[in-house]
Structure formats: structure tokens, C-alpha cells
Image 1 (tube, rainbow, N blue to C red):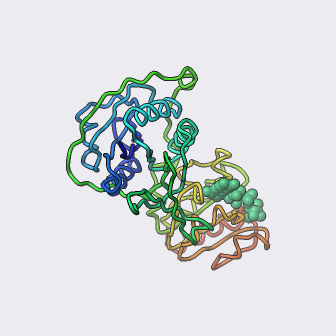
Image 2 (tube, rainbow, N blue to C red; image 1 turned 180 degrees about the vertical axis):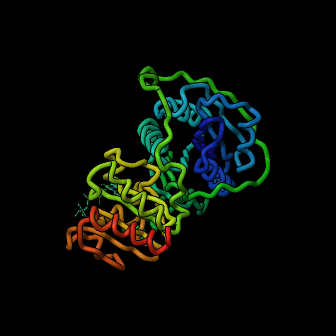
Image 3 (cartoon, rainbow, N blue to C red; image 1 turned 135 degrees about the horizontal axis):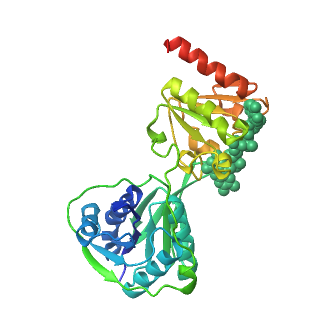
Length: 322
Ligand SMILES: Cc1cc2nc3c(=O)[nH]c(=O)nc-3n(C[C@H](O)[C@H](O)[C@H](O)COP(=O)(O)OP(=O)(O)OC[C@H]3O[C@@H](n4cnc5c(N)ncnc54)[C@H](O)[C@@H]3O)c2cc1C
């Protein structure tokens, strides 16, 4: 039997949008390889009638596993069991850090091939082919698999499509490995700025390590407020805990194309550039005249952001009469 198994993350009784998109993507291609687009949900204490609504996005079956929610290893155990028991050879994730972690573990467990950052799935001659951007997204490569496959989508690459329908819910009992139960989700916190959808913002003020410390993100927030925009960040500052992951732009973060991208204290590393290079206007403030970001900025300001940003905010407020 063939088919595709999609990992579905549920939080507070709601399904993750990227997981729903992954189901729709699986449903759109599974017909050509045979088998069904199935979903697996681990933990979360979700009622069967809610699980059945995954059918509205194209799942025909939902495997329901009782177990710890939001942790990678139990999900690896669950997915490996469901795939082995049902002869499913392809696992699909909508993206995100948890998807990457489960995907990596599942790849090792199944000795599968893996492709991450996938932006599209198609089929040719009864085989699944995935599209993966490379070389700063300037080219797309087609990847096929010999045997089992783990596919992790790029965040927001797969659009959820409501098609109507209801999925059959099948409980699965999984014996978790001892090591899988060594970690547990203790708390899930809301991150500052997580409510802002930076992908939809027309104006982004992005902060980098040049801000100096977490508290200085206030400079970026004030400037963004004055412009009616939102705040974004580099991976360096997100990894340092200065700003939420939800705001990260770049290869392992979000891809944006606002009307204005104002980069403050950002060097312009290639991994950051790929996430913002499509912006209509790029303005960079950096004290180093040789910073790479100036090579792809429309306007470059060489100077200390701690002096420039507050003055800019003041000037914008004054101009707006605020
Ligand atoms: C596999 C992989 C994936 C990655 N994915 C991402 C990703 O998705 N997104 C991402 O952003 N990065 C990513 N990175 C990291 C990336 O390579 C860079 O390390 C990161 O983007 C640098 O962040 P930064 O510009 O904030 O810091 P830095 O490179 O340290 O730059 C800080 C800049 O601030 C300037 N500066 C310092 N003080 C001031 C001041 N007072 N006034 C004005 N300017 C000042 C400096 O001149 C410097 O140019 C990834 C790396 C790898 C290996």
C-alpha cells in the first residue's frame, strides 16, 4: 500500500494552519500514487468529531494516538508505527521547528530519504517529485525518492484548501520507546510579537545584532509603530532570545516582500537575504560601510543606529503630527 501520512499539530484544540496545508497538498497528489492522504495526531485530547473535520482538507483517515503532545520523539514512534503497519512510504510535514525535528528523527528511524524546505509536490509516472528551492531561491530542483521519503515543507508553502468531507478516525496504540518519554512539554508560552503577522505587513523594521541587546528592540518597535508597520528580526538575535522566533526572516525563518524593509544593525548574511530580498524598497542602517547588506539596499545609511533610529522615529511622528 502507498499513500501519504501527514503530521498534524494541534494546539489548544485547534489544528495548525501549516498542517492543514500539508493535508491539502498530500490530497492533491496522492491519487497518482495510490493509497490515501492520512493524518496522524498525537495527544492533544481532541474529540473524534473534531479529528474527523480534517477530512474537510482532504484527509480520508486520521490516526489518533494517545501520547505526549508537542514533543518530537513520541511523534517519531507514532509515525514509524503507523507507516510500517500500513505500508505507507511517504511522510509529510507542513514545516516549523517541530516538523523539522520529528522529520529528522523519522528519517533516521525509517532509513528514508529526506527533503526539507519543500515548496511544492507533484507526481510523474506514478512517482512523487518534490520541488525544493536552492541557490538563494534562484533555482528549483526536483527531487525523487528511492524508497521511503520524509518531506518537510517550507513554512506557509502549502495552502489549506477546504474541499468538504469527513475523515474516518482510527485509534492507534503506540508503545513509546523509553527514551521518547524522557522529555515532556512543561509549558507553552506566548511570545512577544507572535500575534503580529509579519508576512502581511507592508512595512517591516527588522532588527539585528547591531541593536546590542534585547531591550533595544524597543527602538525598532517605536519606529515600526510610527510607520504603522511590524517588527522583524535576524536569526542571530532570535537565537540569542532577544526576539521571538515568529519574527525571524530568512532561510530558516519567514519569507517576506513588504513595500518597505528597514534593516537596523543587520549585516546582510545570505541566509537573511533570501527571506527579504523581494522587498520593494530596502533601507539599511549599519555602522560598517562594507556591510554586505548595502550591496542589495536601495538606500544605505552608514552610522550608529542608536542615534539614527530614535531621530527617525521622532521625525516621522512629527511629520504625522503625532
Ligand atoms: C543553516 C543556516 C541558516 C540560517 N538561517 C538564517 C535565517 O533564517 N535568518 C537569518 O537572519 N540568519 C540566518 N542564519 C544566520 C546568518 O548566517 C547570520 O549569522 C545572521 O543573519 C546574522 O545576523 P545579524 O545581521 O543580526 O548579526 P551580525 O552578522 O552580527 O551583524 C550585525 C551588524 O550590525 C552592525 N552594527 C553593530 N553595531 C551597530 C550600530 N551601533 N549601529 C549600526 N549598525 C551596527 C554591524 O556592523 C553588523 O553588520 C543562518 C545560518 C545558517 C548557517
